[in-house]
Length: 386
Image 1 (cartoon, one colour):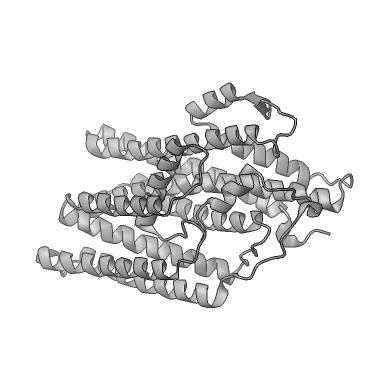
Image 2 (image 1 turned 90 degrees about the horizontal axis):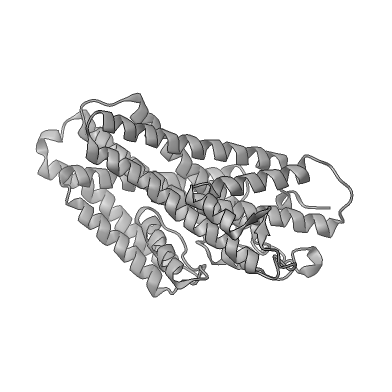
């Protein structure tokens, strides 16, 4: 009998569809905003908005295609030596990814395989075989959630920063701009929680994050810390466009730190450099355990700088632009930065002190139906640890 936390449930299948719809709507609202700016002859805003969409697509397609190739070449995943995945050759997969359909291909495979397992009841499998099939589904879901994480921090988070900067610096705004911001926030929130839950379910020696309060506290911690940083960066950009240089330096520091840690996530050196650059971007907005090692000291240092940035931005706004000090705009944004900072840090401490599932689950072996370690499993183990 399978434990409930080891099952790819019907609810999980339905939520996968919800994640797909959110992903599509987020991209289309951003494209809509880009076209709006183009009609208004705001070519810089239009170009930057579209650039982030394209960058997110390119990064996710590159990793998705490489992982497909790795799985085809892995003798444990593909013992028959097939040269196709779901009837698609490497050339066919390459064509799909060039046209930005890689994630949709993965969604189709996950939904199709999951439908057969969770909606069509069958007694033809033993308990060990069922455990293996559910574990395979979670591995597929984790690959997809990794790609959504990449897309979230390469496209949605920078997009959110850009649109907030435009909204805060303009006297007028549109519903489409607010929709773009709202769906970017939802997409990031979804990718964070989905990634964490899929990752912990796909690794047999790590306990699943409990639903309810632990999930809510973790989500609040991530959303509040990310939101406060984005608002602080937006204020700094309003004060001076040259703040982009400081943001670039922060990204480079994150990338260099990832390089110093000598990550070995990718099968090729060139893709590893891209991976480190993406992780550097993620670290610009939130903290993750880069190599799955103890990071208590690194996390403390990170959030000291985090608190310093969030304290500095409102102070500089009041100092350099005193005419805005008493405006509703300055007071609202400054209050949000302080409130989100405090709430985010409280949720951070509460989660890791009281709710974090750090005790290991019994390690599965070949008898459990999970088999020896494959490239896909190694990939999951080497990705960012929450």
